[in-house]
Image (tube, rainbow over all chains, first blue to last red; front, side, top):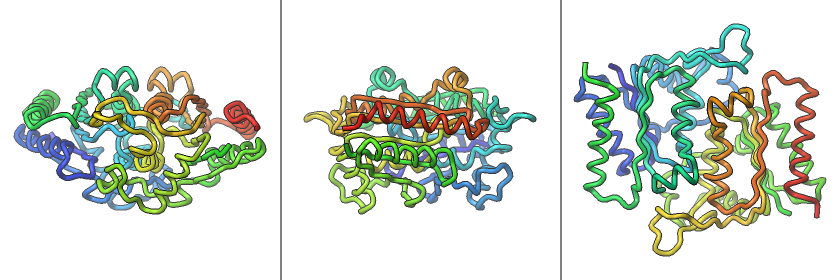
Length: 198
Length: 198
């Protein structure tokens, strides 16, 4: 399988970066091809301007490459911290610019944009790894853990991916080396379930 | 009252821009002072890098100004479209960079970041205007309308603002001039309730 792995965290020494490195290795060990994007490292520009609104609009080469990577991926792995119940701005902009009409989803004939779009992404499974400093019970009770529905329903559900897995790791700021090692092992095990070896 | 008004939409002719223009005039008519930021027009940089993580870190002048505008506002008005259940990336970055520890919220002594922070913003009321092309019932049923909890609980609830108002206008892509005019009037009426004339 061809797996797209996307990381959003500005610190190369972060636990998020460690999750991405371990995910990449786990996927390679399973025999998959991995396309890896570290959005901060590559200087991804997250701003969607009106020129790119129309379906079929010409795109900058970097955005065109991201679109092709997404629409040819058999699976997608997303890694980012929970910032205010949402992804960091750079990953929000990756969604804004790369999940395009006519490529990630389309409206049926006669639909002016208000209807239920048809998902076009071929990814059979999506895995989202998040990190947070809010205890998991409080994240659920006080905030409703918005990242679950955002990624599952608003983004990948709309674009047609049938299988969704997610794990919110935390509390990261209180965790030690052994705990983080166990979390990395857990991430690798989840990837093996989502993307079994051929 | 001193009201901070923040717009995120790249098109000056958008209905979002019209909502911001009408909001500004309505607030002035009520006798309030208005600090207006059009994030796309001012070229706001939404990327938070690690240098700005620590409490008290030195900030670029533009970010320092945004922080001061937020922490001196008696009220806040937010205007943006619903993109994937979230704000556009530029507004997400405004949250990431401007809602800072020690200024918008703080952790109590002995708390390493995992506890319940204390909100520091003086804004007595917050109004969020969103636009969308998904019928409101489907937005609620299929996606859970994540913007409600994101703004109310994850952002302004955490930072201490006691009163929250929100209106999601739609379906915008099917609306005509009369409908939009009625929506602008409705926005002005809501602002008069949230921020009564002195």
